[in-house]
Amino acid sequence: MSPRYEFQVLLHRIGRWWAVDIPRLDLHSQCRTLERVEDLARGLVAEAVGVPPYVIVLDILVPELAPVLGSVVEARHRRAAAVAAENQAIAAAVHELVDKLHVSQGDAGRLLGLPPSEVARFTPPRGSSPAGPGQLTPLPASGPPRPAATPALRSRPGPARRPQQATSPARPSWAIPDDDTERRG
Image: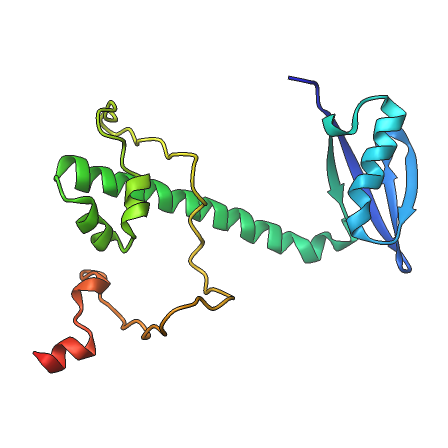
């Protein structure tokens, strides 16, 4: 493993340009767009320190915009923590339902409101050692992260979905009959 060199880069807006300052090396430059900042700063540091650019880690900050951007960063940290907590709760529920109560993966998925492929991600492969008491099975690294519970910005192809009915916390949404079932009754 090669060494990593970490440097803080401070940006300041000057008219239509960005001033790029690397205080630790007393380096200064400027560029027109934020897109160019990282390459410019990495090149300056690589030349000054004499190391390849790929071992340089940059911490790019815009102090004057911190009040505007701070709440977004906080919200993203909270969302990541919530997704991690949700994944742990799902892993524990799947372990309890499938391994201990011998509920099928399909039924566990219906109870948890997840597709079978998601339930399978949280189920240890057959023949692997089960987790000990109070110990969660580690999540597999493969597969995309679970999306946060926010409305989608893009529409999905396929038939239009009916709006969800409000459900009681004691009854899962799949247990509530939809309008067509009640009429056929």
